[in-house]
Each structure stands twice: as C-alpha cells, then as structure tokens.
Image 1: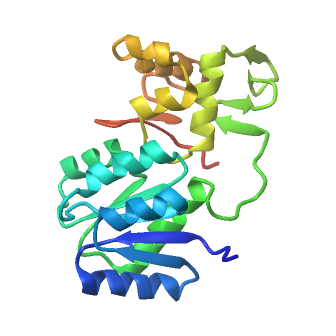
Image 2: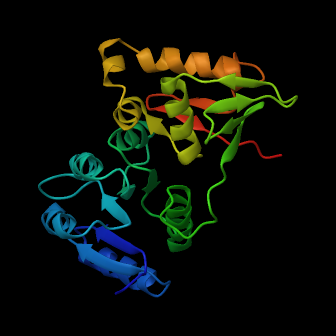
Length: 235
C-alpha cells in the first residue's frame, strides 16, 4: 500500500496541471490530476484524499461548489483554493465554502509547497507528535481529560459541555479559520443554530474565561466574514 499523502490537483489547464503533478510527485506526494470535478467526485467515492488543490474557475461545476461538496463528504479533507483573482472577497468566499487555505495565481511552486505542508500539519494529516492532554489557551490551560480550565496559580474551573466542545475544536484546529456553521455542525449543538449569532455569544463567554483582555482578544480571534481562529501563544 502507498502510504504517501495523496494530493488531488483539479485544474482545467492541462500544462499547469501536469506541472503541479510533476513538481509535487518529486517531493514525496502521491498525486492525481483531473480537469474537472467529475473525476474528483468519482475518486472521492472510493478513496478520501489527504488534500485537494482546487481551482475555482473550472468548467461546469466551479471550485466553490466542489469545496462545499468535499466538506460535506468529510471534515478531514484538506482544501486549498486556487484562483486567478486576488481580491479579499474571493478569499472570504473560498474560506466560507470550507477551504483551509487560499492561494492566488500566479504563485511560486515553493510557496504552494509550504502552504500544503502547513495545512496538512495543522489539520493532523502529516506525521506529528502525540497530542498533548493539555493546551495553553490565552492566560489559562485547557485540560482535555478533565474538561477544566486551569489558572497559573492552579485554580480550576469546570466547563459546560458546549464550552468544552468549542475549546477542544479550537485546540484541534490551531491557526485555522473556522466558519460559524461548520463549528456548529462539528460540535453537535444544533439547537444553537436556532438563535441568530448564538455562536458569537458562546465565543464571548469563552473569551472572558481565557483572554488577558477580552475586549482585545489574542487567543480566539475574529476572522471577519468567516468566523473565528485559535492562535496559540508563542512564548
């Protein structure tokens, strides 16, 4: 069995597609290429790839629709959107469609390779050390076994189920923008969706527990037009 990470390149321009296949193959990846979403859909029905490099401007079904379909199929598939457009609105739409990252054309192959490695690493599809049972989040530490927050002085605070689920979701996806509806689906608290911006209220409550300054959060940051992102402390 081939244990190399499997990358699928969906690009309708044949020369560009073959260039990427050759470049990534030489760097240790198993790579499959398709000119449209038809081949991608067939492959995903029998095998879930590690990452899909998805051009937005495809003939027929566009990349945004395919990204939404991929995300419905599996939350584990890494998606990097590729497009000739470089405006902010396109990046936001791509992320809202379920993409993990976005890179505009033209791009340097080395930059693309760096983004691929980063996405695979932070989503757990690349080899990594055994996960820690404690994660530092802002001014406190999340204990994943006991479902508590721990202060520097050792004081502990028990979390509600929804608070813990949200914090664990952030801990499992560091430095990754998380879209509001995707978060609701992942944590399973679907009743929250009945209330407009309910996820924002939960985030505000969590910020008051972990941020040094909840009015200027640095751990759970807002990604405008998308949702939220957990940024681990650097020190």
